[in-house]
Length: 261
Image (cartoon, rainbow, N blue to C red; front, side):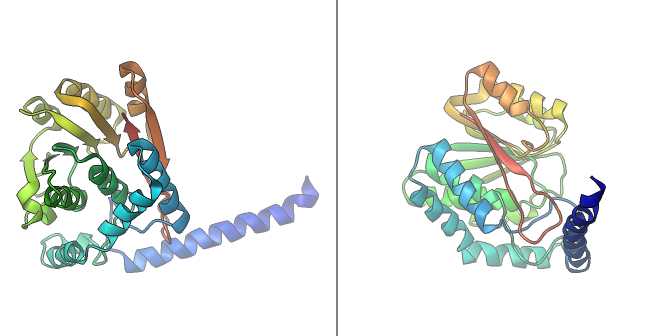
């Protein structure tokens, strides 16, 4: 109705003004041009803990402990800050370390104690470091494991090339489909985070299916864009669940975690 238009316009204007302020602040304070990093809102972090709790069948209090664990890992945080400061690509990365939904990856690895994790898509190696940190904690508790990190870019993974994290990371450069086909040991946890086209995501899950260990978990970082993993879960008789993150103080709407198990 015409009478309600001024009120509707005011609400839209307030929303858009907030987005514009956030966007303008980011433009002058951030260096990132893709793979944006940010903190989660308090509510989004709370929902992430429950998401992992359901998937891994663990008390949510234990999951929150895992989230606190990675966020309070000062040694890893200092390493990432130092590595970024000295990297050739430092002009494209923010100095402050923010993990966002990756803390959920950490919690899942801590909870399930996989022997072999495979991730596709590495970029700087922030996610690789998070996965490696979880595997190192598991190893200290008597459950060793490794992560095979696949990327087509020879410059990828520079954050994960320093000990102790590099001691559990096998960085493989090449096409992800060919690299998956060449895997020589069962995969307990697989994470798609490479080419986010629907076709490529589908090919990765199809390629890794014969490589999976019994009870393996499949994750996708593309769940807010496609239904590929949900469809794969239905075809293969698995359960599926999705989580969508909410970034704090960032213009980007966020990504998420899809899981099939």
